[in-house]
Length: 344
Image 1 (cartoon, rainbow, N blue to C red):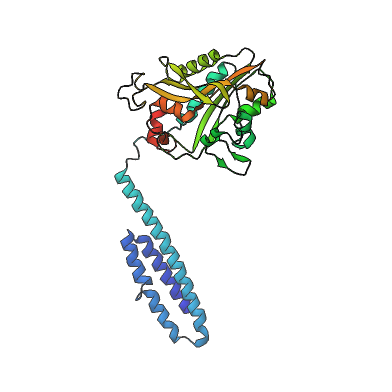
Image 2: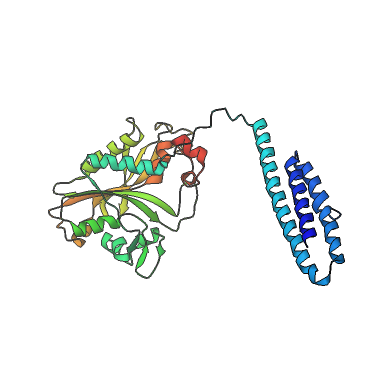
């Protein structure tokens, strides 16, 4: 056994020198073949086991296997070292490591979030509080308290996601108005941004999850002129000083009188003609508005003979479409870095 141990020690020494002297991966492979290959020196040593007494053979085999394991580990270490050197050499040839690095990109707010922030800033400046509410709401707060009973045809316009028989994902932010009026006495001035959900087919103008911004002012002596002035000035702040606003008669169960609110098309400046954004009308629809219906005021415990108020609800993505002259609402949610960088 001592002779075998001496032989293995000498073999490992010569193997280590050969590995250390290998200039490249090809040379290292030649060393492996010479020592660990099918006809290599280790194989020659294994063949001598048959000449040993039977009781010494297991120990001899174990000694050889231990030596082979150590040699293979040494070979793997050398292989990793040479691969690293090769990679660094190739990298140095293809990349100038002294060249200045590409500046790290800085993130920015999504355009929809920026519109929400700017609109809320405008209303805060006029004394409004920003209020947020639950995205899962009750049937009562979504409809009944807003003068939309269960048999009202207006419910069909809110193709809602129902969770239970009385709970649903809110299809508009108007429940925030109800909650606020239930908790506070007039005067009240709030703006309520948030997510809404409707079972709409996704296209260039519709999403099943979108954002609304809701406004409410209730006090004594409030009239429609206050509403027109606030919304006209908001549009000028969001879109530019040249913007005009028009109010078209409409119907909503929770306001009376009611109006659809349009602003002049930012792309064509209201000229219409062949404008692709407004379809030639010269106007972009933003949302609905009107004076709070007396039934809604009575429902929350306000006396409509003393208090009056106005409310509006705009789609934030619609505001963003007009502000940034974007032709497809889906671009705000696709996460395209090039698109977001252009609007940053």
